[in-house]
Length: 353
Image (cartoon, rainbow, N blue to C red; front, top):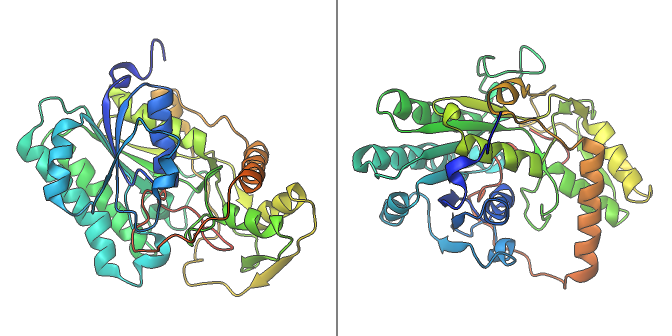
């Protein structure tokens, strides 16, 4: 690619739903600090905190429910660029499937219908954050976007539904949409005070205390771990690039890493004191192998992951040590049903779904 890949996005007004979640807060930071955007983070605080953006006073934080269109509609009218990250988590979706549907599916439909009906004159892009979970047990590795969906849980079903609505509103009505499929995003800022924190954050938390790292199953299940800075840059490119409209893009590394290798790396980075303990497999642990091909987004948009897993783990460990050394003890966050931009399919507990 030649020229500025971010083009008109620089300095633009961007709405980020789930903007106080892990990926959401990092997206806000990149948009403000790197691209000079004027950003609004919309979040219900059910599973997040204003502290996530305390270092970015430039971001306008609005608290509300993404299903409340009386609040969302005026935001859509004034933000040409929209990233829809707010979602239910994979661990809570089966417990309340109707709420899972209303957040992951219906909120997306309602936003798209408002965009179709109102046709904001400055609308540039609506990007929907989906998940590698839609692939289920993949037929080919690394998996590309042509691999058929294989839905194994409620979360994957509603994420795919959101994708279908997003593509429908481009094909049928010309709304400029695109989708990204994240794969196990990790990095600095994943707080283990959030019970839906990724497996890497939980492993680091346990290893830092010399506690046991728990793995569900035999630990030979593999995942494709994507560093958050890479995921954020890929998302911004999809948001900005005209050639991304009407398409779906994997955001992953194409590299498989077993949970056993991951745990061993984290134990070594944390001093080598902790041991690994194996527990029975959970119902959500039904994916044996996973790796996403980034070839399409590389060819079309010029994006490719830059941070290898070991480098990303070292950066995450350093950030966690710095935070522990300087931050006062924090009160537990109130928990609620929404993932607040958690990133769609990030691994939880001792394995990654």
